[in-house]
Image (cartoon, rainbow, N blue to C red; front, side):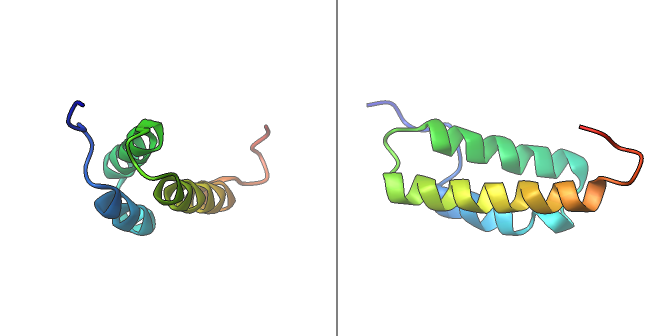
Length: 73
């Protein structure tokens, strides 16, 4: 068993709540930490699902806040 290189799942979950106050670099770090926890199969599936849900919500809000009438996808 190898030790995780990411912060604790609890800390990652808390940090995702702060995404709207974080600058771009900090936000990217929080998101990367979340992705690393999601990929860690040693983390309980229910915990990973909670983090995935919070990350999805944050991504949705970011899209709503950053897309204007001239953007296209």
